[in-house]
Amino acid sequence: MSTSPGLWKAWLLAARPQTLFVSICPVLIAIVLSFRLASIDWFGSVCCLMIALLLQLAANFSNDYFDAKHGVDTPQRVGPKRATAEGWISASSMKRGFILCLLAAFLLGLIIILKAGWLFAILGVAAILSAILYTGGPFPYGYFGLGDVFAFFFFGPVAVCGTYYVNALVWSDYVFILSVAPGLLATAILAVNNLRDCDEDTLHNKRTLAVLLGKRFVKFEYAVCVWVAALIPLYLYFHHGLYPFTVLTIIVTFLAKKPLRMMWDSDDADLNEALVRTAKLLVSFSILFTVGVLAN
Image (cartoon, rainbow, N blue to C red):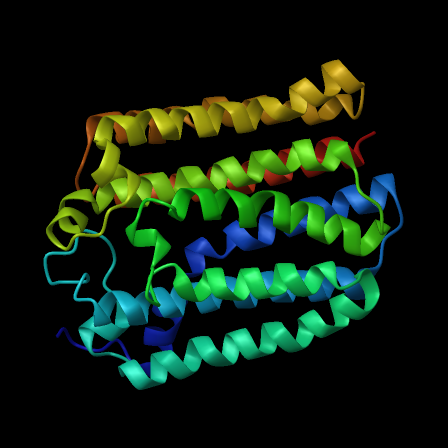
């Protein structure tokens, strides 16, 4: 155990604030699209944003709890220290933390169900289970190479299309195609995390894609995710003629040069910086896309 940073700071570190943009950005993209393409329900949009944040917090807290329980977070960890493993927060307190987040998300979800229909009850249950089962339960899917699939699905199509539907109450193929972009960038963030922790995960039988398919595969996965995500708005403009200024997202490919180089040249703690830079790619994409939509 290391010296505690203090209770409040320990909870802040456990929340992993640098990851919260992964849940915020897709929802904001959907809100902007709702504003331009259909009607906007500000109360419903805020509920969607709060649910996304609460589920992300629940996932972070449960990951902190279950990884410590499974003995994955050790003193040799390359990434940031984890609150439960370090003894800063007790396991029982961390467990209560993610349960409270899930309960709050559930209560807000009832509002969404009343507005948008019972399909959101199914999505809500799936989202809650995915937050817990990433590293917990009898089959922690993050330990079996499925984390990337779930990250793409929930931070892409579910977050974007779900929020858009809450506002517009109609399905949009355009929005669905666009939702692939934040999903891919969320997957890229997880790819950096998996590459950084690959050696330690191998020792503890945590079979991420980096462990199962090798570090080289994850480096290619990262490059494909970033490049395809940045180019999706260009595809939508040239094939559907919508929002020409959204092609500004091509700038993301230039911003990605540094983290791409770090992914290929380093397998150590330098990847912590690559992780932060990749999160900034998602934020940059969201800002550029939003500016492109509102500029038309």
